[in-house]
Length: 431
Ligand SMILES: Cc1cc2nc3c(=O)[nH]c(=O)nc-3n(C[C@H](O)[C@H](O)[C@H](O)COP(=O)(O)OP(=O)(O)OC[C@H]3O[C@@H](n4cnc5c(N)ncnc54)[C@H](O)[C@@H]3O)c2cc1C
Image (cartoon, rainbow, N blue to C red; front, side, top):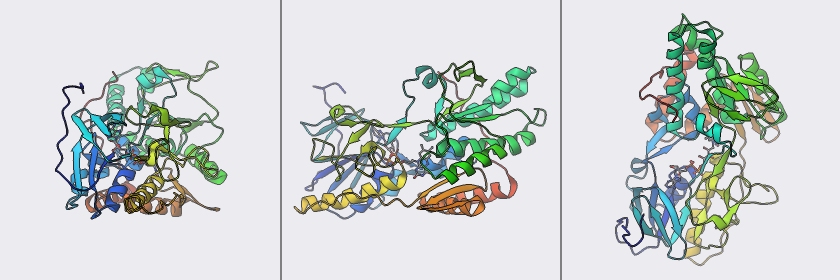
């Protein structure tokens, strides 16, 4: 936006303080819902007109779910909330002195600013990897992975060259956290059940799935038992798991693992890390690690009493969480809810309440009917953990229609091993 010719985003007049919220993720949404009927003007800005349910992105990427079933229109979500205004806008810069945000469609003044912009894929400066691989952070990423995988299978069906076929169909996933583990499990099932049915002329041993992790164990944030169970299950499903292995480079055809080790593949999915993402103007407040904005126990960005950061982008360091809270949905939701309560308290001149994370446990699924779950010292695995995982996710998806569609898809897939969304709707090419 060129200053001097400044275009302003129009929003209705209001006597109440204006709270500009950036980001319709878990944190932004829970914050706004909690302030329904409270005396604020809540203006939500997001670059997309939908909320996306990131925990199931891998199922869209592997043809298990359609994209519409894990996204929800923002306007529909807040239908009838009178103190709410939504604008599709990408916030590019914050002017902290003028209390204004500058976006790709105009500027807007705020009394309070709530940054709930989440995080983005972290390639740790590996430029070649970033250029040639795909992250898993958005619906667009999921659809790109789905298209690339299916396009490459079709190319492999045209090729009589065994080495070319292997490179086209092999899938390398980097990062042994929940996203990498879940993607690897779903890809292995695709390879085992869908590939032989759809491509009977391609040899079964094609579409090898590799999972690469730099640490000595998978699911580093979960219990020892969970990581061991996960490793065993993935191996049983045919996934080649490579621990203590770092990716040095990837040129679109060869993954360089150092020491002369390499894998030939034309599909590399990068889930190895995330970093906070936010508009420019607050660089002084970045905290290590994870490139998050340093906030105090009330989610106030260091140095600014009227700017807050919640969810993945807020780095709230404490003795218990010296690196900030885990970048997961429950932490984002709890921070959104408490900030809403605190903003009411602030307006009423009352003492703010400090944030205390209520860790309800961790879950990860490994394919169609296996999962691991840690609740405090309790550990569960197998079918029971998978039922828990399915229930928690189904309850967390926004919208009755979405819950129903996802539930039906899972039931069909459970009974038939099928993944029904094997569609190349728009072709993907790496730029
Ligand atoms: C593949 C994957 C699997 C996951 N699995 C789990 C899981 O099983 N369980 C779990 O608890 N957590 C999981 N997570 C993590 C969880 O999704 C995040 O912690 C959570 O989404 C964070 O919520 P948030 O509101 O901070 O950010 P987000 O949900 O990322 O929302 C950020 C929003 O901000 C918008 N935005 C960003 N920048 C701008 C800008 N400049 N202008 C306008 N809008 C902007 C984005 O469009 C987006 O809508 C997973 C994440 C991924 C990627």
